[in-house]
Image: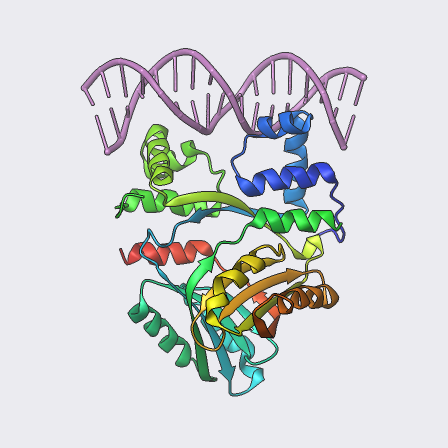
Amino acid sequence: MKGKIKLDETDHQILNMLIDNTRTPFTDIAKKLDISAGTVHVRVKKMEESGIIIGSSLTLNYKKLGYTFIAYVGIFLEKTSQTQFVLNRIEEIPNITVAHVTTGKFNLFCKIRAKNTEHAKNIIFLIDDIDGVSRTETMISMEESLNDKTRLMKSIFENM
Amino acid sequence: MKGKIKLDETDHQILNMLIDNTRTPFTDIAKKLDISAGTVHVRVKKMEESGIIIGSSLTLNYKKLGYTFIAYVGIFLEKTSQTQFVLNRIEEIPNITVAHVTTGKFNLFCKIRAKNTEHAKNIIFLIDDIDGVSRTETMISMEESLNDKTRLMKSIFENM
DNA sequence: GGTGAAAGCACCGAGTT
DNA sequence: AACTCGGTGCTTTCACC
């Protein structure tokens, strides 16, 4: 957790390639950037140690796994002092993939993945039942446009 | 894209290990599951070919990259027939990391990542300026609770 | 901080049961 | 469908720049 980390153009390019495919061989990266594979290895290790790279994960096709349902649920609390308690309860529900404490309309806000409407209904009922939740508002996603992480990263690097 | 794919317990365990760390050596997975590394290889390849595994990606610490700001933006359209057009424009903005067509309050709904409030404001203005957008409503995230993908996967597998 | 070579492994396909 | 095994190629280290 050493304060500020400086990344140069080479680091950016390494990250861009690994974001596209975590298993890109370091030898391939080395060839493309005209450096040695050892250097790629050292740089990646440094970025892991400094906490820039948190980890790596697979992208799965949830539809093929039978999970076709996505919704966002806005949560209203009775008192804002219950925020942390409710957040902890929410984090225990595996079908909630992200949760946020928000300003604006809702106190809390989360995304759920479910098999179908019936399944989603049960998850939303679980949320409604948490102590301190006064009511919820659900937005059902009819279409998710996949996000391209590389594009975001490229724009981040351009502005550094 | 062959309709239904059946995964057994071994596949689930392979996926769980790779979700935690994409670079887990197949030999380690093989040892843990008491099968040969060749078998792990064949199974992973099948899951890639069948489209269950879409790809792999790094998880980065956006805060350390100077991106501390997350917000969700709900979008109201003048006419729903403009949905696809607006979605296409939205996908061109790199700071928008996910976008959804939704039922309920909003017509479209997206997540943005920015450096700070000033930067976020500019992105939201970009959205407001798209033809067909009548107005937007922003929810600022003050805290994001990170999701543990393994937990979701495990719950998916338990119910198969 | 980078290199290049060498040792140690992992990947992956072919052939077998 | 899974195993073993061997060739190929990747990772990782280290002495040197």
